[in-house]
Amino acid sequence: MSQLPVDSRPRPHSLSDLFFSFTLLALQGFGGVLAIVQRELIDRKQWLTTEEFVEDWAVAQILPGPNVINLSMMVGNRYFGLAGALTALAGLLTVPLILVLLLAMVYAHWADHPGVAGALRGMSAVTAGLIFASGLKLLPALKRHPLGQRFALCISAFCFVCIALLRLPLVYVLLVLGPLVWFLVYRKLDR
Image (cartoon, rainbow, N blue to C red; front, side, top):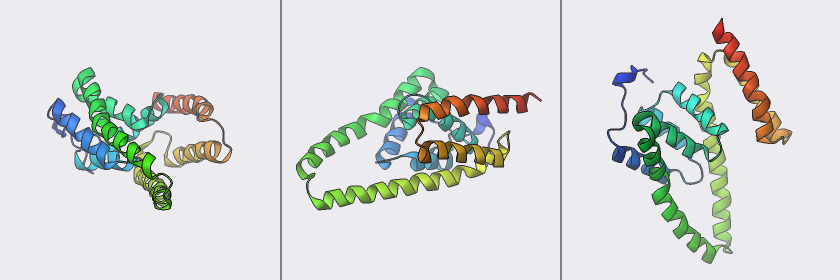
């Protein structure tokens, strides 16, 4: 992907552009939107570089609340301030909320049907694959990490082991690893 200067990069034209962009993004991402957010914001719209996306996504993950909602508010705030943050949030939630309420009514009627249960199990496998593919696609951004790609991968692997294998609570892992890595990056950049 080309790295255009910040002033010449594409950006949302208006609050309505921001609203409809996040509405379309949300409608494409039932069950997990990371892959779609990445493709739309970096590749298609070019509102963020890969590095900006990785940094914003990292912040969105440690903030309370759903990651994509946090990210949408950061992107909206970046271009239009508080009005942009609220517009992006509204775009991300309004139409999907209506659809989810309608689907919940349908699901309540058909929940016992074996075909519905099988379809839901199949969708969970697809979601796991999308998340894995998105992680692989973001790996090149670690090449420019101040601590180096290998060290960043080791920290990522250690975090995965702590959360997925040792079943440690996410908040404790973040409280230990977050400040540790922040301190190491700060020392590296300070030199």
